Amino acid sequence: MESTPACILVLVLVRTNLWEDNNITMTIAEAGERYGLSIDTLRYYERIGLIPPVTRSGRGIRDYSKMDCRRIGFIKRMRSAGIPRCL
Image 1: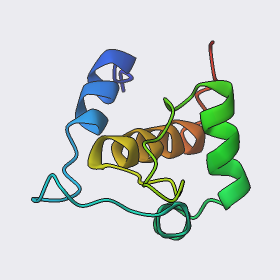
Image 2: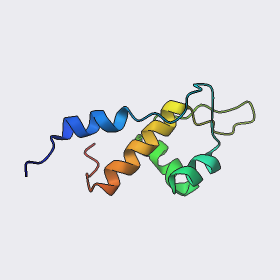
Image 3: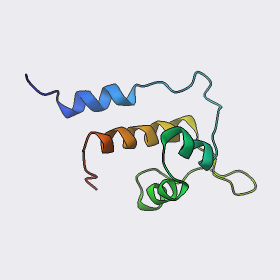
């Protein structure tokens, strides 16, 4: 059986739809719970540049957008597939 090229795998994973409403945001706790990651892990991903700086509310609370959550989901899937960080 021939293996699937990585570029096709990436395209399939990026096209996954999370929400119909583009205006929904999540707090860091909600995003962590949804993706099974700790708050510290999400902060670490932001600090090392795996995800760009997350928009913050007026009170300084992180508001994870639909795109932020897609990135987190993508990173989680790549880690579970055993693909290392190449940056």
